[in-house]
Length: 318
Ligand code: FAD
Image (cartoon, rainbow, N blue to C red; front, side, top):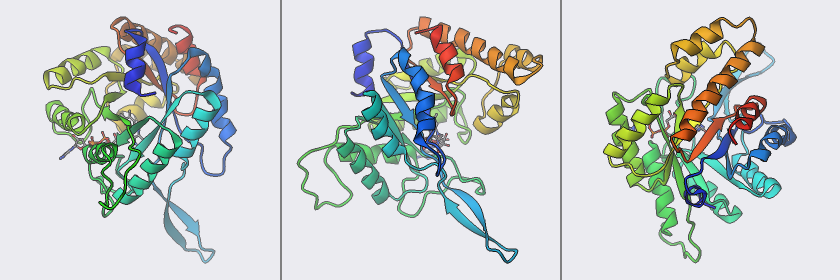
């Protein structure tokens, strides 16, 4: 079922959802199920499955030299989505990236999603690769998420990249896109970024999931400004509980987001990461309670491969 239909059916009730990361190549999918299983009691209507960008790996050639290769360490997103649907009987949403894919390759992935009966896809640009100063699409690839949304919308209308396709059964994907309450790191201003978000919605996006944030006022302000900018699709808040002290440096550095002083002080005064985890859980519970009281359609959690803290949070809310 489409995310937008889940929202309609819930009739104002806040629902629970979360995002998982595929296991690394060579690992067992059971590790992923072990993280999902404890969260099923909270009845998530859907689970998002991320797609990883390619990264450089260095292969020892045995002669003292290293060979630089590009690889994707966590492939399998669409297959994992199919297995989640099959095993748990709920919707699974693959993240489809511009980065690293030509439009043709993207079309093949979308055809797989259509045949597998996936009703939703999340359209994202992807970040630049670690060694690159800025994002570069591959030749023949989509440069911005809005272009990818347009490609998916075209497919929903039966328009494939080549005109000679006899279309008997169209896809009807519900399309999610990313939004940034504290603006995307490359955007010159929040208003410019909102204009870009509007372009994604105009191209066919049906809902928005936000980047993590720790100050609800930023989310509320973002939703207000988005409405003023003519963005009228649901905006689902994304929540990430702090779990280790290092997050104080990593999260602002990687995601260009601010952390509130009271959270920083509470984390800094913890004697170990067990205490930090508890602080993160309690903060996320308060944050989630306020968002739920404000009537958000979903509370969407970034599990980042761990579900015990998400379970502790969800137990207080759902
Ligand atoms: P876009 O919407 O294309 O925007 C990227 C930047 O370009 C913004 O600064 C925007 O303002 C600007 N821009 C947009 N259009 C134009 C234009 N026409 N001209 C000039 N500038 C423009 N990454 C992954 O690798 N895998 C994942 O699975 C993944 N999942 C995510 C899930 C969520 C909910 C979120 C919030 C992010 C996720 N990301 C993921 C990270 C995401 O790929 C990065 O944040 C990426 O840098 C931007 O992606 P986007 O889709 O927002 O890009």
